[in-house]
Length: 408
Image 1 (cartoon, rainbow, N blue to C red):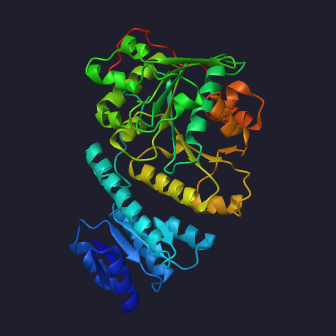
Image 2 (cartoon, rainbow, N blue to C red):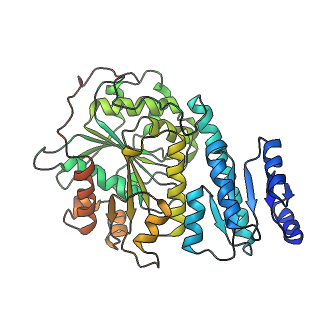
């Protein structure tokens, strides 16, 4: 059921008819009573007649006390200031009430995120709220030092996540003069619709699906047989490709993902993970095993909104803020939003700016990442600058025995 908070009874009835299973309240006390009565409710819709300050205050309280309860705000004018104030408070969507399809879609997305949050909390075995004790971090005192795991994530498709992941893996493999080439493994964990094979022109003869029958006994030797070698531009990257058939993704368990990531980090200097744009069980397993997070967005309000939601989700899951690197892809696109407005919406500093270029889709169609085919290209240079600044500043970590089984 959806809770609709709206002063105009006619419009409230209209919304209730549109959404179906909904209850209408027209005062703050009624809203609080309804929220406290129905602990399974996942969505509150604030109508256009409710003051913005009321929605902001309510969302701010929910963010701390009940993060699984989503708030969607209806406003006829979708200015940057309104969106920024809303996202600061934790409001998930700001939608034009006259666009019925957008209202339904925003409500569905919010409910889906609430379900993912509830699943994440159950998977972690504790309530994921600010102030909870953080889980042990990879590379901490309870784990031996291995290679770094870098996960590239975006909550919205089309942000260039796979482009950054593939080029970052090539760049890390090239290394810098002070350290030389690094051993790099690229994992395509967009299990249903992974694009790494196409973007690197690799034949998916072996994929992570081959690990399913041996999930309970996979070792380093077995993992090596599933990797596909990519060599170009002075870089060599071992790649674990996504399944060819999307349906196979459901058979890859959280435990298998955890084991593969831990094995890979015992074998390589860097493990770069390309992910799906969702907080699934498999993605949570990869994120839990990650040392550094590269969070990708583009200078468009829907993408920035999803980036802000991702940052909030990471807070709820206790993923360290200092381990997050926010990257703005297509940063120089002329789309009517300034960098000041971008930072106002996401409220965190941007560490990497990747320029827009027509050469990016050309390189994807050719199957040659720009970092390999055109290392001096502005996009390649921007990714190399990011890699040096965030990941290549330290010498390679001491390696474990290459054939010693590593348990998670």
